[in-house]
Image (cartoon, rainbow, N blue to C red; front, side, top):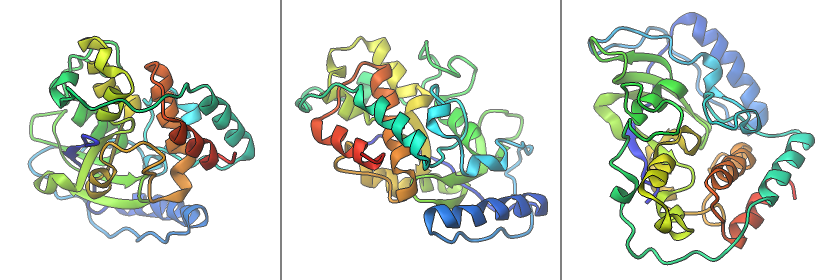
Length: 270
């Protein structure tokens, strides 16, 4: 499995944000060829929590991964310029390759319990908020929290880079958004993580560089696939996805399969 967590999306927006979002979406039509629905009036209906600004509307299209090597900026923007594609290919070319090993002995718990806040050595660790909610706050907008909490997200707006669609999420329907491990944990296990220390596996599982909140159904369809078997349905984001996959693999000294590396290079113009 891709081991996505059950999490977040969005519900309505105030007029100023609608205007801003509308402008952004109009530009996205040229990039993705997908006409996105406009905003509706009214604010988010809270569940007892106070409203937070969360990420700005720019999170809907996010950050070029080449400008976000730590994964600490919101969203995942398309890579479209020839110069950036060349830089992406250079990065991907550094990946070593080998065959995918057996899944024998794999268990999610070998990477620590889900969304632990105590995986040292990664951004946002030990801040009093679990990894899942950290990711929702980082990538979402119009975030609302549980009453008397600045951690537990009850509702939010999310632009899903994998599908190119807006998601109106509420905790009551948590499965509509899941947290995807860009490099799936099972894939990592088969490519060498079975021999890692417990601490290193915990870092991979909770590193914001390897995590994106996305459509739950899309995350479930991905399972533990590498790029040769699965790419985001949104074609505009495929080079960016390949870059993020490569960034994670290089950070953790992971090889990828030959077919995975080949398709990653092709998605970035090779």
